[in-house]
Length: 57
Image (cartoon, rainbow, N blue to C red; front, side, top):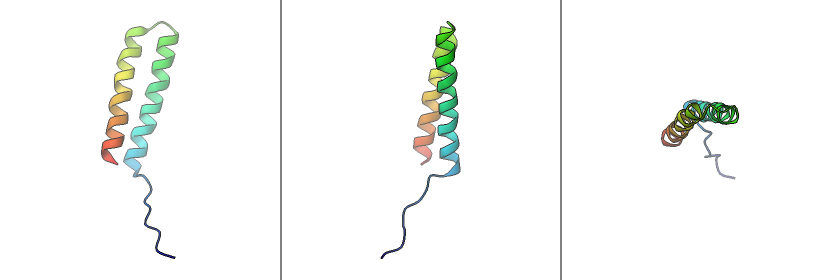
């Protein structure tokens, strides 16, 4: 058997994806309660956080 060469995700990448998930939940809540401007801004933040998480990894 060879050595285990798989690496886990970095803490920064995991943090970025957690932030993206939280922002997505806030965006859904804003949209459901009729705060459409807040939903759009939060959705953009979700995309940015997810992209940062992907680029860091």
